[in-house]
Image 1 (cartoon, rainbow, N blue to C red):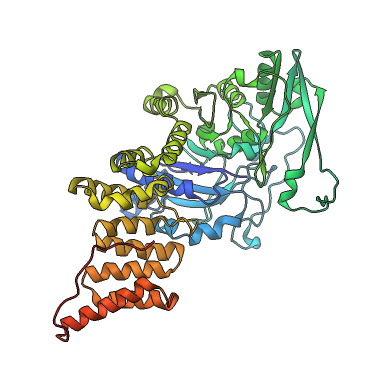
Image 2: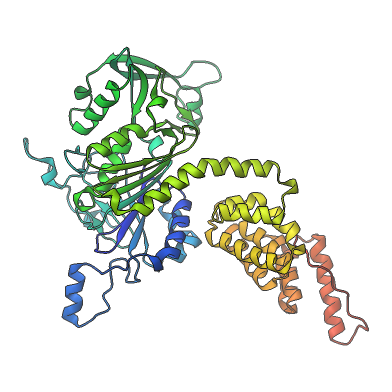
Length: 557
């Protein structure tokens, strides 16, 4: 498992890593939002070395390590292996961002052992011969931090080598390389990382040791390694009395946080997210002084009351498995190092957390205010419930409420897709001002569209909306995008043909209808329109006395 980040080795630039990026859909959306805000962000000044080189050459146009495009951040999409790199490199939406120099890739294994944080030997595309030899192990009795290990602030534990290799630029980020804080975005990452289980029974701390088993029956083959086997897995938990210090002898912070949590409860059950602690330590170490802002969203616990009572840990099985995240313990660890923490206020649903390490909370009041407003007044979980309820009752939903919801979602393509029919059916009959608003809002949806499933073709649906609004140029371009992102289809060729017909590009229209029929020879709409086109051409050539009557254009589904 991994995490994404925005990182910066260079003065004036911040690096944003995201662990466990998966498809990188969230990364794309965040990048689009950041690029729109770039005019309000500080301008990078370059690092000292580049400034000196520029002065020596007499060049005042210093190019920063972000690609020389004037952006104050670099976004690093990370995962624990190279498995997704080919997908990212070839995705058309991400390709549009490569030339800007604001995005890069890196292997980051959040649970790596020392020397393996950046993926270890052979994890980049360079030849193995070009890899530097692994550092020698520290001598007995020596300081691990002195060997370049990934160490957090204060008396943080030793969690790996801490080297992050950027795939596109070939650069290496090592502990202490970055002048600015690292901003870590971890969305549904911590719940899938390693955790230790504990409970407090009658005021006594006990570690819960897990034994897994699979029932033997004719329906289950225990020798199979298929993921479906997880559905049959059974866990039994055995309590063993422990002292906090003996649980984490190599990390005083974890031991102290565990002791504080145990001392504040008489009966409680909780997990210790050691994988999350390890991941945060490694990414923090990239910045001088371990400065970082960690923004995490996950299922988990943020209040003491949620830990009360003795019960077995819950494992959610969904192709893999995941556990609840103990944000309360992460909170204690962050504050013990002088950091500050913001959490969701509500007990139910998705939780958000922002942990600032080495950052003065008074220095960023606007962020704190925005976080509290967005999680307390109208949280992500609240919006999710709200739009789902509206979807169930959307039969009579009007255009204005649908637009309001779309704007409230910040033009989320998934939300748009749920309510697309409202715009398709009612848009053509709206007033001029409302139609102009629809055009603007659905264009913003298209900017955030990150195609993953051909069955969820957002570009095609937006094209249908523009076709209904008689904006045929825009509609034709969107149907081209549909074919580019989700594959060639006879209906998209047909819709383009209708658009070109009304744009009076008759030769292009004829080509589109022919392409549609080549894919589906008996498609009746394309047959009808090709005949209509032939009649129009015949009329224009003077062979027909009367021009065929035009109809209200309607996009095929």
